[in-house]
Image 1 (cartoon, rainbow, N blue to C red):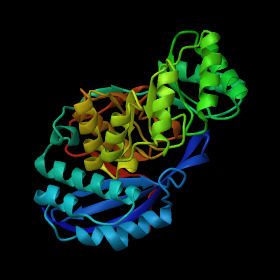
Image 2 (image 1 turned 90 degrees about the vertical axis):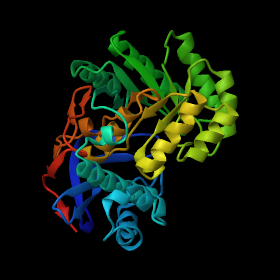
Image 3 (image 1 turned 45 degrees about the vertical axis):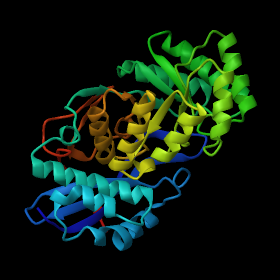
Image 4 (image 1 turned 180 degrees about the horizontal axis):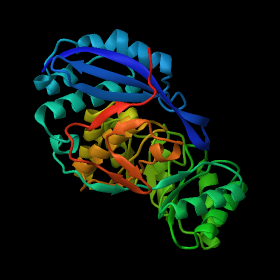
Length: 360
């Protein structure tokens, strides 16, 4: 099977409510979608959101990287040379590379007649995802937690990263709202100093609040600071923005800076980079979470397949982005139903089409 052409489009889906973190506010999912065409009629799907605050890429740079730098390197090549094709790729930004790799792996798995997770060495399973509560007033976050419980979620990620007193109030009200029916972990999105992290976590601990994890409390580049903070806190630390690559993962392992690593396809530049991070973590016996950006079910389905391919290392998933949107325009692929992410037996990603695409 030869790659014969491509189409680019935009996918847009409004969110149920505005999504706010310490880094940004977003009111809709908005992805660049790549449809990679083959000479036998199969289509491979990939996608990439704009994540300027994290990776530096906006939609324009993603489209430019795909059209000018990356896609010319794969058009006309055979999918049976996937490993060489991916290894040969040069240029592009991580978001664009992730979209292209996802589409390439989707096509290759379809050609092999296997679900992507099985193509990568795993088996189709049903995963259980957490749900994210974005930064808001304590009352609003407590109300959102109650709605999450009603939808069946038993693990909540609570976004924080404002003033310490406000963060403590947010977390305490969420904990009161769930009343022991759900576990929580905290995500500060790089917003704190070491002293703020110690202050907030100490106040919460003295209030009887226990968090499963504390995700990325310090700026991404401060790996040494994470290592120092890890010695000062009882809550396990998860690195997210500090780990884009296998080299980052190795540095965190060497410093003893994290108890768990958060893998995201857009950060790692795609499936091969994500697998490389998982391999480093596995060698160090450090577990991973498979996460996602605020993106469509195209990229999140690919992340679910990767998590199912490395279950011994990827022990948690945070793949809730399609559940934050008002509707899912992707037909086929993984089924997102409450906390359940179901991977089906269809070849590749199993995507049959996407409603409402705006072709570029």
